[in-house]
Image (cartoon, rainbow over all chains, first blue to last red; front, side, top):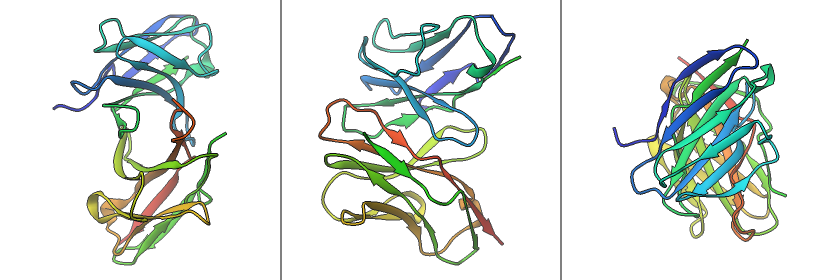
Length: 113
Length: 115
């Protein structure tokens, strides 16, 4: 399978704990995006990388959120001190360039108890 | 600022009938427009896009969409619906003249095709 992969697919955690998600983009895609999707809503942009550089962050990305793409390949999204409002589907997408189609992974569903 | 409106939360259609899922958008510059489909517990799957050129765009699984600049619309259509088309459909837009702007999605329209 050469699509975008995300791990884990599901994560249940208690409020206050830290969680980390991983995204592996399509090989050779230099752009990688993170989105958050809550029930009944479309995906909302969080941040994106071009190679290893994080170029833009949404105001939705509070100080508790951090994303990295250390070698320009896979990316991680960490949420510290999780809150119940962080419960959502976290989607990763990749594209070859700025104007190209973004291809999405299956998502990581986070539930904060 | 960019925005997308999908005015219908739910569309019901009988199998074999034509379907339309509506989308209108707002951007300052030239729009890039996309349609994605989402099946339960899955990520978004790309259907089609409009960048420039012919206003009628053909995509995967027999879907097509028509770009209408004067009405700022990009409605998704299919001549004959299948039960397997039942899913959540998202329209998205990006302002191509506004630098590195992200995709902005609508809230989605749930399509239900009844046998």
